[in-house]
Length: 116
Image 1 (cartoon, helix red, strand yellow):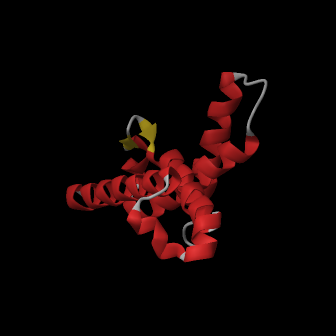
Image 2 (tube, one colour):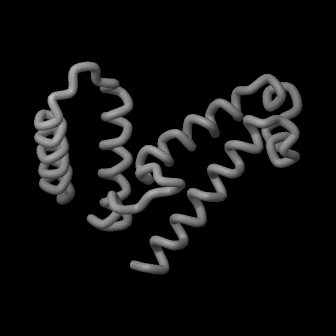
């Protein structure tokens, strides 16, 4: 409840930025995912959260993409047949990719926590 003013202000500012860009074709789901990630990140890590990137990608987008990779790996045929621990063997490229992404996300989180 006490975070509502922060969320409202952030959302208003973000929509103003989008309006100023005069975007014609908008991927609304992608924008809402990014906004949600930024809001949650700012609530946990502070207002500087938006300045962080991983491999040149804003951290909120990187984390959202990473969560998609985790989901895709979890429901992949190999994971369903052999169990989710199969990912740790890094046999399949999707599993290698999601483990690499997860490691980068954890490293960045540790970096943010040490700085803050």
